[in-house]
Amino acid sequence: MNQQSYALRRAGIVGALIESMRPLHWGRNAFVLAALLFDKKLDKLVPWLHAGAAFVLFCLVASGVYLVNDLLDMERDRQHPRKRHRPLASGRLPVPVAVVAAVLCLGLGTGLGFILRWELGLILLLYVLINLAYSLGLKNIVVVDTFAIASGYVLRVAAGAVAVQVEQFSPWLYVFTTLFAMLVSLAKRRHELLLLAENAGNHRSSLSSYSLAFFDHTIAIMVGGAIVVYALYTF
Image (cartoon, rainbow, N blue to C red; front, side):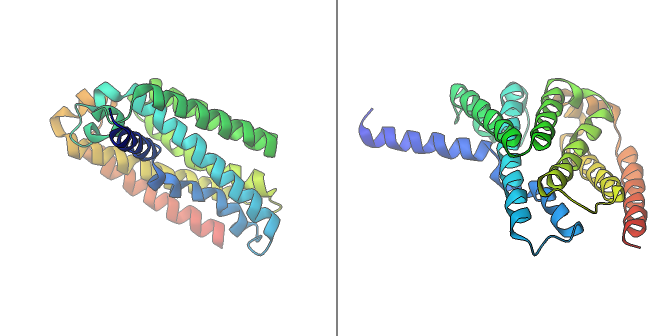
């Protein structure tokens, strides 16, 4: 292998690694910034720095979780019409590289969280443990899988509250976040069921116990609940 082809291969691996870290999904971590808005600290620099640090740490651990999930689901993803193109499933990203990157992301993210604030470190560690449990089996348990996904959004809000040391923060916001997150996770499962149709159960066993009618009714309930809770919170 000449120097040029080696450089191209290395660049391809780096690109595949970045893709597997899901930078396009980092926007979800903006939930950590909610505390700045609702605790009226948008005009203060130090809380912004702390919230920004929490955002970066959540990006790190979330990327580590994505890598672990892709490693565990690699064979199953190869049977999926869309996920088979993921870097690990398609073979573009070597397994050893993904393993090392996952360990670094998870270790650095949680470790730096404990250095910033021990409460933030605990929240990040809890996020990692819940997602590892999800990857190892919770995703195959009906309803529990959606709660596991939803918990990630609530933990992001909690991390922001800890990072900026909120003085005024209503529990209604946590309730609203939970309902909103449940809505997102249910919509995700509904999309999977619709996309995979009769093969849904082969990809994820919990999908065989769901139906489109269940999702439609539950999503409607979550939307109604979120509207009521937000109204109670704001008024």
